[in-house]
Image (cartoon, rainbow, N blue to C red; front, side, top):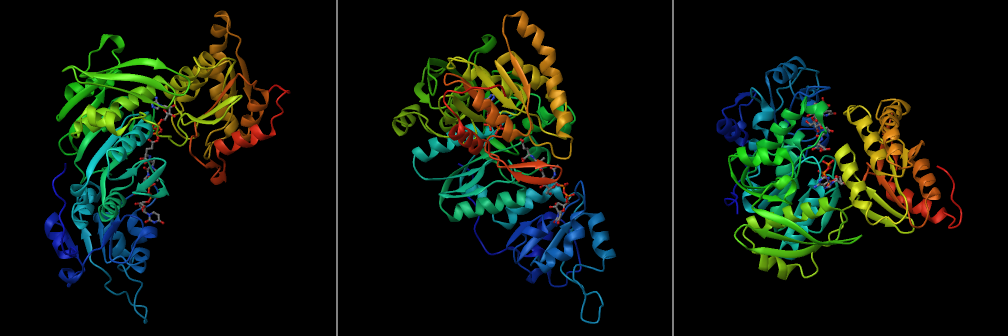
Length: 533
Ligand SMILES: CC(=O)N[C@H]1[C@@H](OP(=O)(O)OP(=O)(O)OC[C@H]2O[C@@H](n3ccc(=O)[nH]c3=O)[C@H](O)[C@@H]2O)O[C@H](CO)[C@@H](O)[C@@H]1O[C@H](C)C(=O)N[C@@H](C)C(=O)N[C@H](CCC(=O)O)C(=O)O
Ligand SMILES: Nc1ncnc2c1ncn2[C@@H]1O[C@H](COP(=O)(O)OP(=O)(O)OP(=O)(O)O)[C@@H](O)[C@H]1O
């Protein structure tokens, strides 16, 4: 349990400047101005907020200082460049009726405001993270799934839960769609404040590597954090896998967490467990002969659930089941269970609270949308996840295994051809289509995926596997054709977009929900007829 959150009077601008050693410009009455919250976007300012005007990739937040003040901001936190911008624009207010600039609100100047923003937001909100139990999951794949499973466990143990992740933000029973996997620090501490007010006892959140690199979770020391795995993704942002790993590893330091649970099935997990500067407990399936504190053994794998046991080196054990297909979901479930145990629950209490095992449904993660043919929508959008999702579905597929997928534009070009290869190596019918092309030419992205697929085709043929390979666009057509072509015993995996409902093409967002398309295609399907995609 975290240290108790503080309560108290609203903080003043003068106290903020003193607490963080900030220079204050334009503030004769800073001691009288109180702060109700923090925002780093003028479009989300509420009355009484501090506007954090940070430099960005496209603009400097200080360019929006006046709009922020008009929207109710009572002070501005920025850097020297931002202060200069504000001064050059004549201050933070629009001027008096004669057209002369007025002094506006106080401007607080920090060397690098992003480095203090998390602590500032926590301070303004009186450290809400100290009043709830906090859990965080990081890793390339499995964050969302593990978070939902842990939330299910914590809810079963009793009490209100909160969830912050890629799909949605949950405060007790209230849900809103999420924009980022991990919100920026001002929103995070605001959400934690709402959770405390709503009597939430425990919050689970996904922490992306972007969030760690951008200090979005600063000001929170999580009770238990977990690492699932690391594979190639987001390398354009981090500039290489080592930097990507370092960003993830920074969560496993006293600045961010008290205890860590690390899945050591990959070399990155093992490296993290060795070097972390907090208490670590490891979890593993024994891959490559690796021992872990908690070993996972699969007892029985069915199409829609897997029974498994986790056993600690001390002899304690827990046998349960997870109602999501795939071995990787057993690992996710084991990590979630061990996180609960690390927070003070016993295996016996977990068994009692979860008489039917883990049954959470995770939107767009190995989500079963239809049967005959079985259609699964999954968020796999990198090579490793695509491989594992197909491998998970193969044993329970009586007929052919189809995959419909594409690659995202403007991100990680390196993974496109690899995804094409992985699809040919693991599926029988491969339909290459579009994902979110953003501003890139969709046909050029498909061509890169197709090049990888074509290179893998001869090896598949030599191995006696006939793989049918198609390129179909747009995505809606690809999903419909695959489902029309599939037989009742086949499985169609629609991969890459999961829960997402907007597809961005050339700057325009179009509604597209893979699950809706699957349902429509199924309703239009003639049971007798099959045709080529
Ligand atoms: C690449 C990236 O991380 N960009 C982040 C960055 O945006 P930016 O540098 O482009 O900002 P900008 O447009 O130049 O604006 C500068 C500042 O002015 C503010 N502004 C801007 C316009 C305006 O009208 N008013 C205003 O106040 C902005 O809030 C910003 O603080 O600063 C913004 C807030 O400061 C972030 O919200 C934004 O995240 C964007 C939305 C984003 O998509 N990030 C992705 C890459 C991301 O974080 N993804 C991870 C990982 C997901 C995964 O694992 O797959 C996530 O956690 O979601
Ligand atoms: N432990 C795991 N190991 C490997 N792949 C996994 C694992 N868990 C889930 N996956 C695959 O990765 C996809 C994304 O899973 P999930 O959304 O849980 O991960 P995530 O880390 O939240 O992803 P993102 O950061 O992209 O939102 C799933 O749809 C599944 O195909």
